[in-house]
Image (cartoon, rainbow, N blue to C red; front, side, top):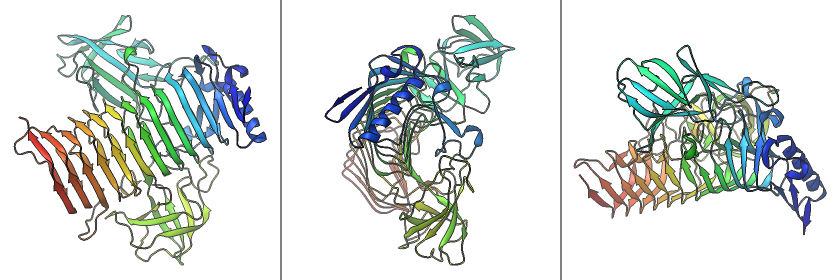
Length: 587
């Protein structure tokens, strides 16, 4: 340990961490973190660096920290997956830097890479992360002849051909000898995609196992598929991606924390989910690469979203990042609507409920928080009636199943709920926990989904980014209380100086609140400015917008290919300004 002017350095190697990558470092890192906490108790303010001398460090789940945690957009209240294994856990400690010194951190099994819980001023910096055997399997067609295809399986995967099926095996625990995970063909309860290594386009379909009649192991990590007849969609260069659908743990997790930074990281695979910020404040990602290591033959870097911020506040800042090879949206920033299911006689006490099966178990309200009620059918708020939480009667805790309910919260407000609010017809949003957002200088490639999903009323800037061949709208603004229950409305969005190349979706910029009943005079969203962007369209729209008041589309450059192509589509919008755009027909 080194101490210089109240800057403390704790070297993980002093506690048994192995920089040669030969042995498990999980327990050693726990011991080093305990030393950091001891220092913190003696000096509450000094900066502490948890230092990994440059090398390769292995993290196995068997000896890693374990916590019961409930995480947004994952497995909800499902008790089978309530315990999470965490490689590097920063918990109840402030002013800490996890310094990797360009090391490689290799993870095993199914686990969360790192987490910050109830901590402030924490930085994760300068390391590359990967899994020894990713839980998503990527295999690539090398050659096709008549009705047969030879497929390459990357060396990291263990497999066997048994009874005409491909059996997948995760690695074995060095402690128990048990296999961490298994699967067959596309996996039970599967999710699959395909990535064209030639065009670099990823789509949400996988035809490799369609109508196959046999599989033969050729050795050298090659297998041969036989089909009833020549398979038109199975072609050389197609990489097929397969995994389970269960989001059992987040890839990284920030909860009840503040001022968290990820700097200069290379994240090659995140199991279960992506980087998830929950009920936290001020999160920054700068120079973070989300991408599978191409030299391995793998093409999946994330089980689902790369970055999801749920119910955060302060500022979410994402700069100079690279996103490729996800299985869902690279960036999704939202709150959570909870449905009003009961109102007391004095209308000051309400029971609200998490409605989507993937979200439950963590608290969303605290005394003093402001809340707003919204109609599920129109997605419009009850005007001029923002309430304040006076008391929490009962609530999930986020880290225990020993509560009255994992889905319901009972809160008491300082003033009565408006008469307009009816049980099950309205939802409530915590508007104290809504963040400002900046997404700048990022690149998005090889993604089958949207690029940036934003639903927050605070100022948003999406600027100087490049989106290449995304499978859906690069920018999506919704607001929904009927499916995902991801809140809320936007009031100040600037989309400026971005480049959109041949992306799919109804609109490259797609604004679509999920409503079942329109209101003639009011809109869900307002004040969206789209300026100085370059659009290179397929046969879709540059902007497809619904229910916006104050939409400006100014000084953009739009390249399109169809004479009758509709560049702008507006539904139930008002105060729309479209001017000084340069439109080029390129047949």
